[in-house]
Image (tube, rainbow, N blue to C red; front, side, top):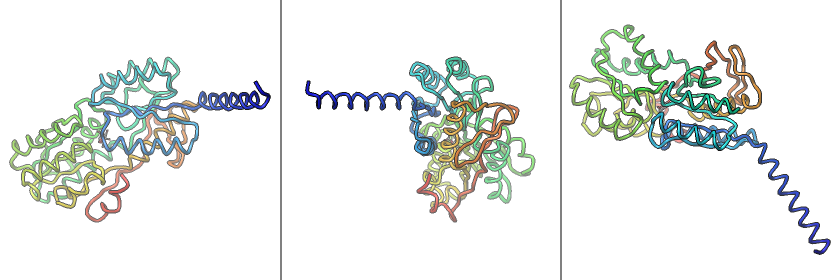
Amino acid sequence: MSILRKALTTAALATALIANGAHAETKRIALVVKALGIGFFEAANKGAEEAAKELGDVEIIYTGPTDTTAEGQIEVINSLIAQGVDAIAISANDPDAVAPALKKAMERGITVISWDSGVAKDGRQMHLNPSSSALIGNTIIKLAADHMPDGGDVAILSATSTSTNQNIWIEEATKVLPNYPGVNLVATVYGDDLADKSYREAQGLIQTYPNLKAIIAPTTVGILAASQAVTDAGKIGSINVTGLGLPSEMAGAVESGATVSFAIWNPIDLGYAATMLAYNISNGAKAEPGASIPMGRMGAATLDDNNEAAMSDPFTYDKSNIEEFKSIF
Ligand code: RAM
């Protein structure tokens, strides 16, 4: 081998070693979502990618089951344990069912946090709520009540019946119902965050409750499907669809009048913040009551007695501002 050739080979080898070394130090953070194909989680993933870019040494693994089931998430978690990822940040389909798999992950040294939809306390190191649950519960009822001057029947179209976040919000909404006299909650149904099932459940509500004045869907999948069902049933103007939605998905419903207004927090910021927290805990930040863990441009999360923190307040969208936001998330 010529001296030149040998020198080149050595240089190539050194480059390969550096590349490998850098790879070994890259933190692999898995963003486990309720199911693939949901716009809300795709927006959160944008935020996770933004955090990864800012941090420089992070690879995001965006993953989840095809349906919103705990079983599907357990399979995903087990495969992430086998891959030896550094951190798992999960939005859970069931607070308890996924906990044993996540405990196994923590035993193997994997950082585990939940965000959006929480995991039981012993199955995660911390949980990031998008906002105060009581505030979200009150907001979804108020959004409906504000457009029902004479009161009337309302129904809730939720995600899955085991979904931690929607169940807490519905519980909080039920607590404040007495503050809205004349607003009657007649049913709560579950569309499982599947577009077709949510549409059918909304149709069922429209048929079963002829005096229905509002469908409240605290899920981006549910609100979109319900606004379509109300439109197809010719009920725009008599049934107002509201709850939590994405401006990008709800612009048509607001334009047609199927939805007067709805709310949401910024899902990009939520994915960004969850990634920052997973990264910092994986790098040694202690998740314990009172701790303040940095979340990059989102400030810091201060953990309560349950190792939970909340991000920011929901924001209301209607005809006056939807145009401005529909291209963002
Ligand atoms: C759906 C999911 C998610 C929830 C939003 C509002 O995308 O159920 O968990 O936070 O709606």
